[in-house]
Length: 447
Image 1: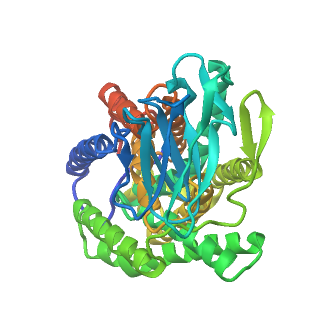
Image 2: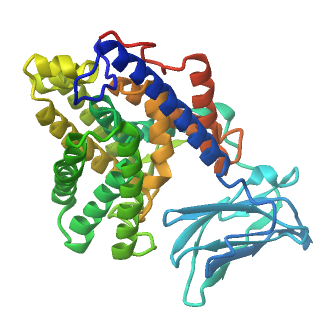
């Protein structure tokens, strides 16, 4: 199988010098990514050890955990909804407060495993809904006492997390493949790829909610708009910069600046709130054991699989797909063979943007919610998938995304949910120490 490998093009230099320079650049890029991922992963907030979290927000959900009038300390409470999630533990008086960014309905979950032995939630279940009204706050208490807990077996929990991980990995794979396509054909590590993800979700909201178009029309239009943005980016920015002979490091810095600029343009137009796509609150359907998926989850997995299979067929059997692989392997040789490199790179940008836009729509349902910086939340995981699978390998990016998705979801069984992204980054660093070229990468290029 041919694999994507990064090879910048433009200019005539000696083959040996080019290979040495590319190997050095690849090593520098890997070190840079590992350092960035390590620092960013370490900066992810750990679970709060106090009785209050989210004090910077104006709205809050509070409660008091007691059993027969006696407070219970160190009980874990989690609040999630509207694209926001936070957790806290009760203080010595059994009290807890979690600040939230906006009004709305949130799920409040009491972790029964942190209750004393023989104590359980007796009514309403361990997960309850809380709606913040005009006052800006709500009190959510659980009725607890002596009783038996509804315990889900470890096997069921693992199976449930594996399925959720595959769902997340497929969605992440769509975005990661596009990122790897661009890297494979141009050598560019595009940090603005996250904004392509956000753009797809915002366009889906614009067509499906603002313009009230049917979803079967709104979502294809959103993907088409993403394709148009990819064409505009390459035609208006990246091709002129390549023509001027800018190096890969300079191009990467431009992508970082573009990412920040576009992200705050999004915030200017849509604000800092969270928006929901139609059907994001669909009820879950019990499948087997403790596994329950909504119709949106099932549709997301099906769409991801179909698109990935179609992309693989295009890449392996179409003339443009073969040309794309040829450019990734050796752009100079591909150009000498009569392949229009600029045309193929333009198509790659369009496809990468389409995949990122579709991934953004699915990510808006998985979160759930649309925010101006939602793409940035998974940017590190996209890079982790690409580096884990092998820099520039499209199929490697898919495998890396599935591994990262499963790792993120299953790690929540043994570590706090706020730290689940760190597990994927630690796995990435460990694999790079053993196999620096990634799972499907090659140690050196043959010119």
